[in-house]
Image 1: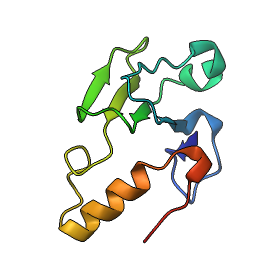
Image 2: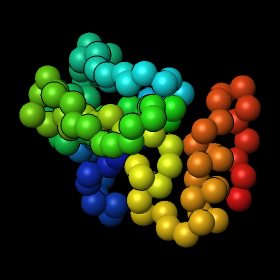
Image 3: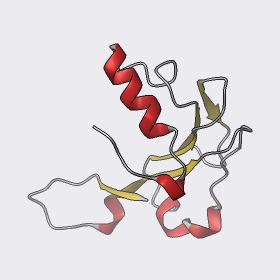
Amino acid sequence: MVPIYLGKREDRFDPAKLSALLMKVKNSTNPNSYHVLKKDYEPLFRLGNPIITILVDLAVSKPGIVPVESFASNVFAFTVRGAGDATYNCFTGERMNQILSMNLSHTTSNASIVL
């Protein structure tokens, strides 16, 4: 979870202006579906602020970004599939493609980042 504050920096902190980016990364070869449990984040969802949830399926061979149906109008859910430049097309060039493929294909037991 990455907390996001929607208020102005100079104003007094207001918990009602909280939002979040919720992410889960898996190295599964089969596409998964990501369903955030409403009860786990109920106080945050109740605020009505926009929330983004993302499941990253690194080892799925068919790349793509798939919107997932959400239980609330303020929760936007996506599944990101694949680990190459076909999925992450903001990276260009052969060297960037190699780095991206190498880093995104590591399993958790072998999780070092290479630059």
